Amino acid sequence: MIDTGILRRLGETLDSRRDADPDSSYVAGLFARGEDVILRKVLEEATECLLASKQGDKLNVVREVADLWFHSMVLLSWHQLKPDDVLAELRRREGISGIDEKASRS
Image (cartoon, rainbow, N blue to C red; front, side, top):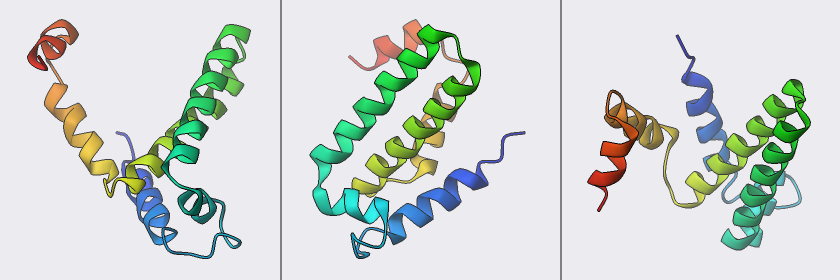
């Protein structure tokens, strides 16, 4: 069983940094610098995931995916969304073919 509690706790921590002093917190600094900076971090981490995968370094893949998830969660918090919103969407998609799910979006 996956411990989704870690995602919820991390989401709460990120939310608590929204109005914190940017000099006191990396996340507060991201929030203070705005959405474009957060989006660039998500893109940077996604690129690093791709590079780690191409290098075949499994430990680095795990670390880069953790960074990508973290910065994606910062983006969720920016939009005042919670990890549970993403988990609910994954639950909704469970058991549905990818082809059918994608077709349902049109």
